[in-house]
Image 1 (cartoon, rainbow, N blue to C red):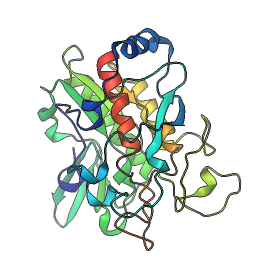
Image 2: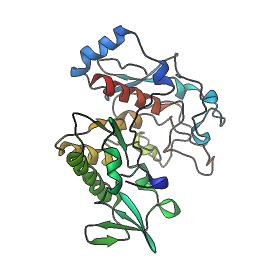
Image 3: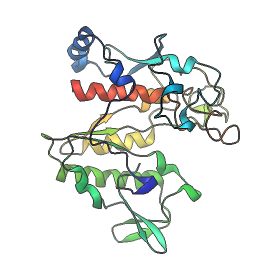
Image 4: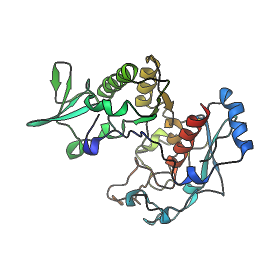
Length: 296
């Protein structure tokens, strides 16, 4: 488990704030989901325009950090706030690293086969793990100086290779330490960026998310599956007690319009095409987690 800025996002007690608390649908909607859930993949569908959105006013929400509050930062278009995730065939109810980094002077060493503070997780009722996003950090933002695996220490390792080793360490720890009859374990899928317009556009080019105001229409993404998500899926399939994957990757790939872009801290100099505006796409992630918690 990481420490400080590199800490894994682990939620022991899930507090459904904002939209999830205020947007419980009717009993009929719940019945619709529960009756169709076994034959419906809630992670496959499309984004539909919905005038009842957004679920809350980001300007009056005290929990949103400034860099993600695109509306308050001057984003002029409002369409990105109006899209709701709609699975094909059913409805849903409204509603960083996993291994150690240790200070081993003179360097910070990332240990891909060690989770020393994991005992803190053992008594939780619900665990939600999330990783990948900060594995891409380089330069001064990179929270390690060397990588250790077994008896080998190196300065550099392919990020995807290192990520898979870390995820396998996590999966082994879950199988050995967590009782599935007492604890629900979820892994939130990879959150994609939109730094290359040829990932979604046939026109190609080296564009980014700047100026994007609408989702990719349709159920498919031109660039195909995200490599890190494929790693997660592969490792989870090997687990004795598989974690439940909150598969947000494809649905998020379709939202090229959902990033702060020039309306984050970086402005036009460093547009943000990796984080998400709030209100926005992560609210739909919460709805899917809510669905998994109460209908799985």
